[in-house]
Length: 369
Image 1 (spheres, rainbow, N blue to C red):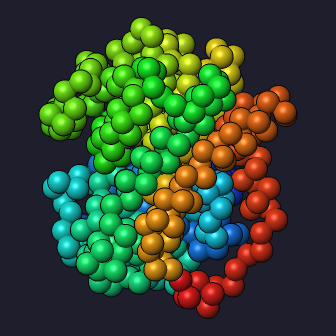
Image 2 (cartoon, rainbow, N blue to C red):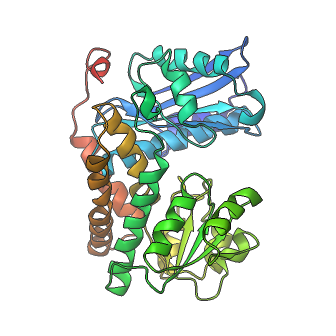
């Protein structure tokens, strides 16, 4: 992992998207592990964020993704009211081809080397069973199975939190916190999206879905034959009469092209880093599209894994995730008051909390989690 160009270094040291405390490049030749662990901030406590396992086109792309995701976790954890900073890890490669127990444990040992500054969990390409493997060598692992002292699948509360963000968006825009009769498009019905579809249908919404994986689509349509299927994301966002668009796959879904053809009045989804670049949030506002900031509404999962560190209680976590409704409404109110897009309002609130926080002592304090 030596091909880290000046573009990444510029992001890290000289841009507003940087400011990270630490970036660790990890390699274990025996297992084929190549990974990046990025710690953006420990102002609120040990950095907490998932491990993404993905076949990046280049190592530079992997580092850039880790930086972006770690920064997003700082803001997500701050807005969720957690005593955690933001971090993220990415493992480079196709998990279907190279993932082994030996590789995961090699990764876990790198997490251990950070002495508790970073607590890991599941993300795209990693699952509860993987975290059980990592936890054999790393005490700073969450998202484990109940049989191994964990909370299980965090996608359940991630979807529930996104649903609360949608309810808040409906309350703000239409005066009623229900999705009944609304047409909602869900792009990506995998780990989180298929749970979200269930919440929407239970609330009386009309649901249109799409996913690049036919098996993911079939799982939803087999369980819910009333769901409509769009050919692809481009067709979904152009769907006539669409009220809400929920990006639930990878980031960058909202870009210069998609925003201009989007028919929905609200964007509220589970994907991280939905805004392809700075300025997209203003484009949404200019078109009169209400944007529920991604890292606010998708915080249910991190609320769950953070609770695991203190003895998991599902009801306690669900109650915390329910507050995403109030937090989302508060962001919309702040945006209106300050005359800025909701994404900027959320950033201001999160940055204020981080700026006012004390920095925990390491490694002693972190070792208590």
